[in-house]
Image (cartoon, rainbow, N blue to C red):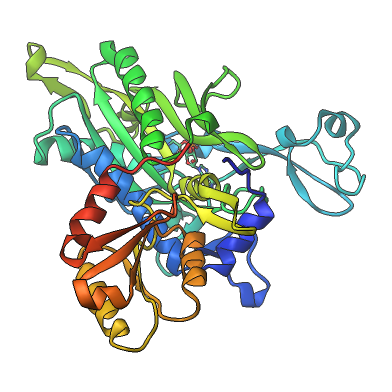
Length: 445
Ligand code: GAP
């Protein structure tokens, strides 16, 4: 069964179960900024780890990097962001709201009428999306720095360092996860588009003659990644950028889109950035960023770059929206988050059937043993059915119940979240049984 969750339902579940809270809520909140609660931070870290393993550990030729958010201001001149990273905005003279002119109905633009109050709209002006601040005690022109709007530039400026110190040979990639900031005006749709967000980017450096081959490879590899994470394929598709959509650095670009509750939207971009960024950094820094290829008879060239650029926080939204399902069980509604077991904030819930007669002690012992390998949660409060439901709602894939039989034969009940099937497992075999179930996990159709 497939449920399309409404955003209101998802936002409310995220708040209620400690996934995501509005930023500074006790002060009335800050538009477009969100905090990750105890469940949310676990989920976000697991999504990041899933990506990191896929993009570094599983490749011989991709290494990681963690560059700083603040960079030399010339970086953003070289990258083209100072000049080109703009949105066309219009203001309403009456209600003072600001809109992206390409996101309001054509009719409002042609009549200059505000879509909210009908007041008069100004002509569109280009508005740079980078946040500006100052470094040091003086707020002078010379102290201006930007909060990075993409993590990619930290990779380009370290290209030479990585080649020299990690002895990487083309083709190779550099992967990075980190915060990025954009002064976006869109405040709708929860964590989909925020001013502060996280990106998971990988820049793959190649010989210019091989750009089409590697572009196709990465495009497919990135699509398959989401399937492996348990996202339904029917809600994923490609969208090729038309000439009017291409970023200033891209020769060709495809988005992987997901069908969110508010429609098909970009989840990740795969871009052929050519040698644009490295060339611009050579020009602006006056440093040589060419590569001497001893596997190509000593040819010297500026590498091309295939970029895979995913939003971490946007992937968290995708995972949450995709996992949500409602079903009827014995006349009652069950809400179940069908999260991949490697992403679920808690992997195993451990429950004594009752607190007395030594069952709580045995359950605690099992939980303490498993916590070295899995994220566990011990719960002895309330009817067992309710304890299962609480875990279903946060996506815990396995539940262990300790009952009177456990004391006699050292077996427990292992309950699978998706099928609700319960099997008896000897306590010493729990670790391996869960390990296998995680490895072989398939979401039910
Ligand atoms: N380095 C290339 C780059 O930044 P992008 O298409 O602007 O390309 C890549 O962004 C990804 O970053 C997007 O597909 C999206 O997942 C995420 N992203 C971009 N802006 C975002 C925002 N304001 N809030 C949340 N995620 C965002």
